[in-house]
Length: 400
Image (cartoon, rainbow, N blue to C red; front, side, top):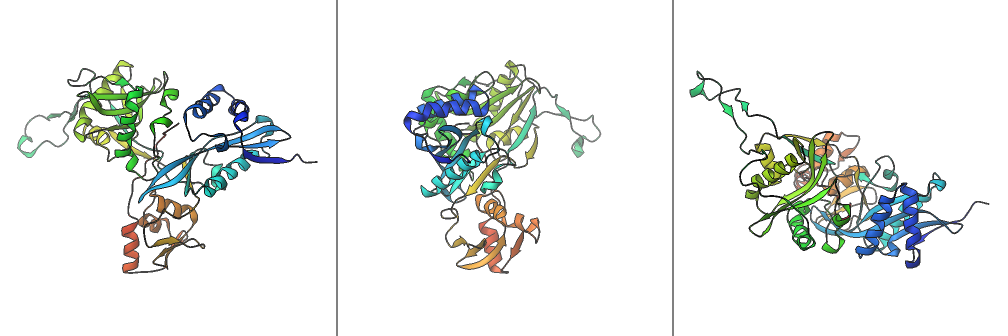
């Protein structure tokens, strides 16, 4: 007889068993340690948030679902982060992990969440309604050791002279003047860093709201990853998450912000100094191009590229709250404006449109097999204006 599977929330007494499952499922202690840290420090990581599959009394799979507010084009909405999805190696390929994911989404929907977001395996999660909605990253890379370059086309009045050496507008050498030292994050800075995040990167679609009590970098920082703050005049001038990679000689910065645009050049110098101290010769900022640090790096001669959306995903649990006034999505998947069908597309494209990963013009470029306009003239222009280009920003906070 086939064993009976029960999917439910854990109890307080069962949390050590869930931790044991994390260690078995992930094959190392690190994720167990992370789960134990969350359970001890994050008020939202309750036993009920740990959705477990139990077969014949044994814990065989688990998904943790944490309530978070998520940013949309038009404001914050109730959402959840799905994380720490694992299955006991002796019970894989039986659907137990999938059952806990589906259960976590059902629980989130029942609690009124409109969105579920996660960072996971692209081939696995679309079956649950997850679609890539975020660029993995924008990379702006500076070679800290590159010499000034010669001007290829000197000004007309200097055409008869020798080519003029054009230095970058920002010099990032380790001995640059005014490059204050970066400092390790302390508990007293966490609230200020959260506030700065909300004022900068937290403005972008599908950013996750943070709270100081949910801060996880005290666990996640180690020799390979540091959350650093940059002081200015006794206060916070900026912060940066840094990940050194000796193999590529690169200091990667997945997240950073400054309190004032004018601080960007000096903070870049501080990051350059820090990279040089680690023996690294490149600095890669994974920031939206419009952020001051990314702009300053471009002025310093940085190269920039966009990495396609792969692992940052979201599932729409309810269209309520995700659309501006006058808009809705019909059961047939049509975009409605004032009750009138204006656009027909598939669910992944609709989710990307609403969540800011794609614009109405992008849908048109996808081709007629994926996008069909049902109106013309002023109606179409209203949709294009409403769903214009928006720059999404996937962040690894607050607990990754």
